[in-house]
Image 1: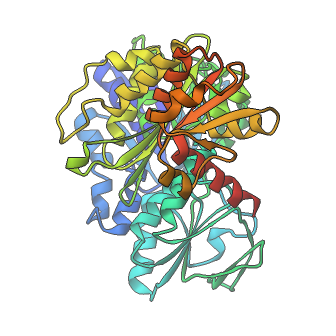
Image 2: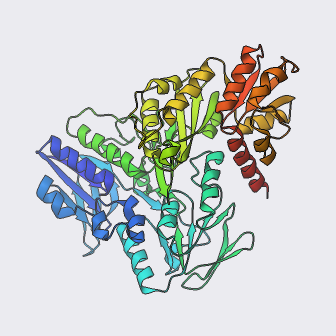
Image 3: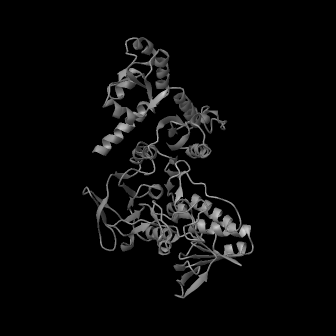
Length: 552
């Protein structure tokens, strides 16, 4: 009987086992995990700590008995795999409850060893009873119990990624400080990340551009001392500075590690060692857009990889086709999402792109719609969408998934305009933000060039650019683009008679729509080098503010 052995039993490992059993009743499937829980939701932990999920057991709906009864799969928790003998195809396993060490033979071995939280050199969480990581069910219980048993008032969260932001939201009833050494959600471009920072300033004590110098306290942290000298009092500290793949077991037998630091695999999720596969958080994927290695440890990807390997080990033909690195997070009533390449990714790949900032509400004003900002990255040569980021409120999830689908199937930017999306005022505007993004893209394809605030600022320092603000004088007086002249749209045709048609011109309004109308007027009057400012003055002012903050 063929023996499939899996090391690790969270999302990826149990997916392998379940799919293999669905395909074949005549294989022996054994899973080992050194933890006490299996198949649990890491992503749900913040919501248990914050009370949205009432019982921690809701995050662990299945146990070893469930898998044995349903699938005839043997899952052994609190069993640590110590070594792998790749020549004899056996593993050495230690029963952590009894201390017994034994060997287990395999025909096919699957490494699903996951990832572990990163520590800070100046702050090892295990050294302090009030410092916690957020990685497994035992972490969730420990945090919950500590808050319940102690007088916690001030909480410091270190890290501004998914877990850091989710924990900030869930612990908002305390005096909370979040510390991030760079920008929030590092997978975003800085201009989009700054929107998160602006928003969070109203919700918590937000510190960016800072790192921890040292801590004050013996067995408990009393203060965090930042490099600037700022001292942060803390009754509890949450470390959320990212994760790294658990590759040590794989490296012992010469499994190749990729440039991301995770295990390198092919499209079948095979490692360089025969009969050894790797999946989930320990494994490197690749970008659907660029083909480059990509590490995004998410439960969704882990489950998908697990199903593919479970299928292949039992005669199936599924292949891993890469990922876009899609992610989404809710923090209070704001939602942040990203997929595919960012602008900085495209620049690193030397890809020529157009960058669109589309600022539109998710619903009509009469339905109290709230603005969302869609930043789309377009390949100049093919007009294909290669990436997108959205910061907004309700409806961000719907829009990012439309963009994920479009990018996956190679859609061009103007294709978005032709989508027959569902419409009702309770869900969208008649011209949905996705459709409007397609309209902007179509305008670019027919010669209506756009320019980002960053590009405008850089070019204006090197060449003479005539910037025209087509808003009302009242709006212009509040703030405007540096060196811009105010010419309301209704006066533009007369003003154009006095302007050199060979000059580079940038038009703008508040968000971009009227700026595009002004651009059309000038192009139709014979001006050849006219740009519309992407996202208008609103986007420009946010960019300038973010630059000013970084310089301080």
